[in-house]
Amino acid sequence: MAVVRPKPIINHGPAPIQSLPITPERYISAEWMQRENDLMWPKQWLFACLEQDVRETGEFVRFNLGRESIIISRGRDGEVHAMYNACQHRGARICVTERGCVESFVCPYHGWSYRPDGHLVVVPSHHLFEGGVNREERSLPKVRCETFMGLVFICMDNSALPLLESLGVIAERLAPFHLERMTLVGDQTVFLEANWKAVFDNFGELYHVEHIHPQHAMLFDCPTAQVELFTNGHTSVEILGHTVNSTMPVPPTMNFYQLAQCEKFGMDPTTFDGHVLDFRLAMQRRRREMGAALGYDYSDLSDSRLTDIEQFNLFPNTMVTVQPEAALVMRARPHPSDPNKCYWDKFTFKLQPNPAVAERAGVTFRPWRESELLPIPRPVHDEFTQDDVIAGRKTMDATVDQDIHFIRDVQAGMHSRGFTSQLLNEEEARVQHYHDWLDHFMGAR
Ligand code: FES
Ligand SMILES: [Fe+2]
Image (tube, rainbow, N blue to C red; front, side, top):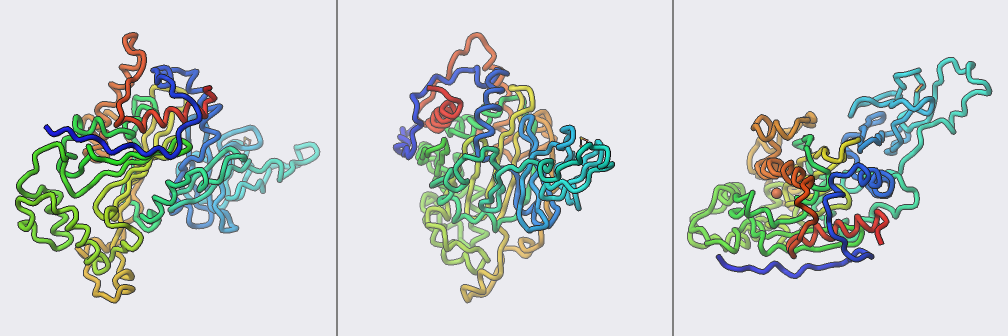
């Protein structure tokens, strides 16, 4: 097997501390979990919900994170608001459903009622409160909230940098993929028996890919991936796509994925018999030629972005994977009380052809398949357990399913007296970088 060195890592933002050993404690200890709740989660911008779910007045999403719960809703002023989901009478959760549309939020306990922007409007039997109830003071406390690419982020820290400053270069890299133009086609949550960081780590390295995702060798060239590290603990990786793993023999003919791409873009697959490695550049040219006619606007994407795959890990818990016509947003959420459990959310997007793109380019619109034009209703949120995935009752896609098969065993090993700290290789630099910044935010010196 050929030895292929990874590309040198580009580090734009080393953490302002020395790397510490990554010991199991941070994955299994209730005390660590509490410190994250005190020091880390309240300070960070967190992906909370999709803007499309709070488009109309009164539409809301409840975002639960550990023991915290936040409501994001569209107010009558047309703005998106975020506020704590805790009634200002005696603290009850006022919103107990994950998504919907309301005239007002009515607390189920004694009926205090709040406008969609959190303003307190009704206090039943108001006269019972000596001196009255100050509607301003007893409105739901606000949480900062900003939108980027159709994703709504919240931040509980009033002194944190604005979202785009906190994302830095990552935001500029992501924006050309126009996630906001894509259609949500999947909304899933799996309940995992692993710490939320163990799952996030898994999506911070490609070292495991050859071992548990053998199918990727026919789709991507992971060994030559470009890793970049950014300030605030964000990371990215760019992987050549529409090609094969460069450490393995080149297959003589196209695989099923490449054949499907040939069909979509009207290319003759036999042209590439014996020349599979030519396919990537040929596909870049073909996408440029055909994109507008097929209803896809690639004008903001460089050639390499037409074939490759890029993954951005946004500190602390969200991962965005982008390709020209598809994207994934995945998010780890801690369990309210058990460091050995978490929730892993997966939002799947695809770009539907848009006839206006062809019209603007002055070409005849020829969608790949008429069915691609059909409106796609918002998928129902599907929640299940890792056992559902392992038993084959549910799937998040072949790759994520394979990860899920392993992750509980990783967590189990963290509890062993025989395991004391991780040893990371250069391909796992994103994991180290992430934990360095995590340690920094947790107050390590
Ligand atoms: S706790 Fe909400 S009205 Fe009493
Ligand atoms: Fe994986």
